[in-house]
Length: 260
Ligand SMILES: Nc1ncnc2c1ncn2[C@@H]1O[C@H](COP(=O)(O)OP(=O)(O)OP(=O)(O)O)[C@@H](O)[C@H]1O
Ligand SMILES: [Mg+2]
Image (cartoon, rainbow, N blue to C red; front, side, top):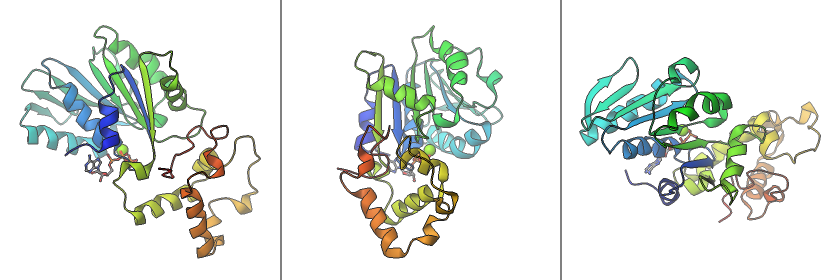
């Protein structure tokens, strides 16, 4: 599978720590799986993907990682119980859930891809995972869909934007820029954002402005909106410079709308 242009830009970034904030369905997980194999191509590398939970590692990642190892004909031994694959070149690819911190300890790692970082506790990285990269000078990539500004994905995104932080680099792309969601799907994602009070508060409500009275909660909004109004709301979202594209208000101003 060939990477999309934005996926390629991120994959080619030479920084030690790369942060990727995108809308849903951008292609983060697909890029992550590619990164695992790319970093395990050299002999004797220890490469991990860390997901918010073991269940997610098994349900979302494991089949795709196994399929890739088989397709490349790189697998020497596949271990179903601990979600790991030993490659013919001596490298090992493992999937881990951050819900079991003890399972993250003790390793010496060359590369970590953290998916859905917004759902992984900061301390799981800073206290447990970060030290595993120290001996090797290993690299990490942090991917996620932003969930407001009070979380560490936002903090490390800002670090990646800071020109004085040589080791850090960060990117932000919209769902539409990802190129893998057809127009109907974009509608679906837009509606799911309206339905999610949390996401609405984080992305569409200017910071500091009081919450809407509950009757106007976005949870009820779609049923209150006549179709033309909903359509124009979407048009507004996709407008090149909607008011909420103002970065004074929003950490990820171009979160959903493709502003070209
Ligand atoms: N380079 C690519 N070439 C072809 N299809 C791709 C590519 N990258 C991603 N896709 C497809 O796009 C869809 C979304 O990809 P993926 O699951 O990786 O996105 P995601 O950002 O992890 O989504 P989510 O927000 O749901 O976790 C999938 O159907 C995937 O197969
Ligand atoms: Mg994903």
